[in-house]
Image 1: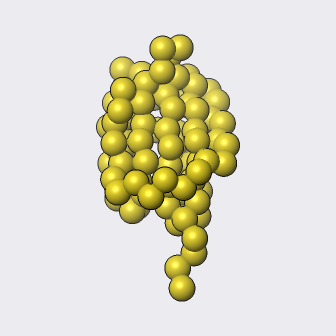
Image 2: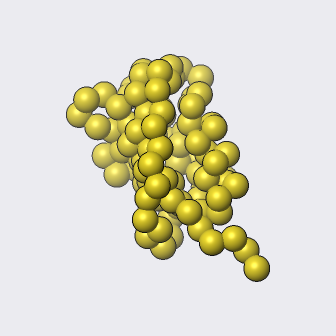
Length: 93
């Protein structure tokens, strides 16, 4: 039986806007079978909800600590989130 899905609400701070971070996150999430969303925040950070198998979610957290080549991640925080049963990974803002 597959593991129960897990979800994380993530905030990424640093140079993460204007460097294709959201598009990179969506590609990475979709490649690993994850669902959720990613968006820019007014304070210059990026927020995301990442949902799926625990191992894939943790791998996504590790990848998000670096991001795409032009990004500079200064800090990533992740809190437990509610599983939403989303069907895709979207850029929402």
